Length: 440
Ligand SMILES: Cc1ncc(COP(=O)(O)O)c(C=O)c1O
Image 1 (cartoon, protein in one colour):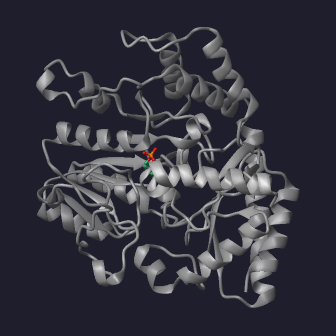
Image 2: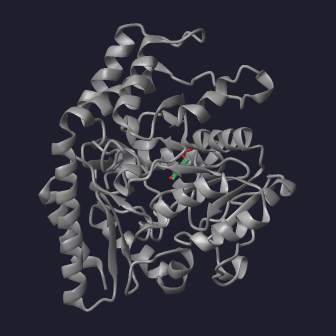
């Protein structure tokens, strides 16, 4: 590293550590090695020393089209040039246009509202479910992440000492992701296994459940796929027992098709949340779903309205970015998703060949362009399966070696990798080569 680069890097790290608690603005970014990145373009990112990495982290998945996609950036530049500002009064033309595009293209959406983060969207979904069912309890899944709001932020990664052995039917103790939350409110939250309909029924027999919220594919502990019939089973239970089915598609949404994973599973949720890929890295998120539930937001009686308020909701920069992204996916979707699937297959096949040639009992779990490797002999079906079998420490060590080789897998065990439309076959081949060199 040159003296100039070392000086710059030290200054970046020093300033962040001195003035930002923990040195990062989101706890998930607190990783080792802590590399200050400088630039991103397409499938690549560069650190402050000018070292280039093939990026498979994609900043926790939004960059479906790659970093700094030209069409999306140009749409943002244009909107600023057109003096589209934030007026804070009445509707704007482009948010209506985006809502109309989305509701026409995405089967799960009859109506939609725009927010800034996935966490706001999931929290609002819970409020609506309570408002329309007059019930207070809801169910989440162990190993799922549904944002940082008080009640939802719990039980992603836990030790077995914290939550106990696998139970079915049954539920796990709540383990909040941070302190400062109100303990009394946690009695409304119930945590069950993914892929376990019996436990949903078990909780619903005991409590008035307003909603089940789940990622359709658990993508915060890698890629844990729903078993055949699980999501349809959730839909049937929601209809039978009267709770709302909320699919959290913040991570899965738009990655494999405009309809999200809901359309792959052929399930129509009551409410659905999106974020990340919808604007290819620009900050916007949304909650949508059936009009009869979404309209609760504007109920005639103000006492029945869940509060939706946000200075920056529907900000023209995010809306323009989402309009450009969704338009591109609508017009070129067949080509883009085909490319992503081909690269996903290439990565899966190449890595499996390396693993079997080396005799390493490990597997790849993949959903389109999202994949994760597990150092265990089968793909996990729920959190307990993962925690009992995966080698977490070895996983992180391996990722650190890949990073040294210029392939960026975020150095956190099981975290999924995302391929973007900007990746090319040679990027995947190069990643497989480094994988072969580093895995042991
Ligand atoms: C499935 C899921 N839901 C919700 C969220 C929260 O989104 P945000 O970080 O934009 O608040 C995330 C973030 O990673 C997520 O993966």
